[in-house]
Structures are given as C-alpha cells and as structure tokens.
Image (cartoon, rainbow, N blue to C red; front, side):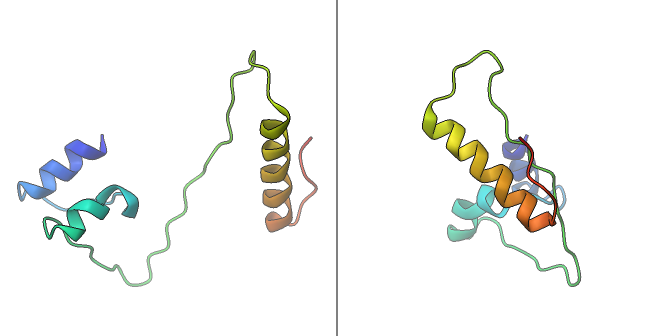
Length: 81
C-alpha cells in the first residue's frame, strides 16, 4: 500500500510514484520531496461504483448522471444511461 511505499522511500530504499495527495503531509514536513519528471503525463482509469442492491437517493442518482454526462462530453461521445 501507499503507506508502506512511503516508509520504504523514507528509509532510503528507493524512489516511487504515488499520488500527490498521499504525500502532502510528508512534503510539508520536509520528510519527502517531489521530483518533476519532464515530459511524463500519467493517466489512470477511475470507476464510478455503488452497491448494486442499494437504493440510490435522488442526490446520488443525480450525481451519477452528472458524472456520466461530464465524462461523455469530455470524450465527445453520447452519455451512458
């Protein structure tokens, strides 16, 4: 997990790629530092999930609809229903 990776880097066992959010505290405290990698652009897939058997509130359904429409618009395709 991320905590184990951070501890390994703190112990000078190497370098790692982790989420910027995961190391905010350590960077502010001077324990770890960020290194820029020129020309590197990372993307990772994210999934919108919910329990299939759970009732979705109107707000949750609206959020799901918003996310689907936003992603479809940014990809230039029709939204999923």
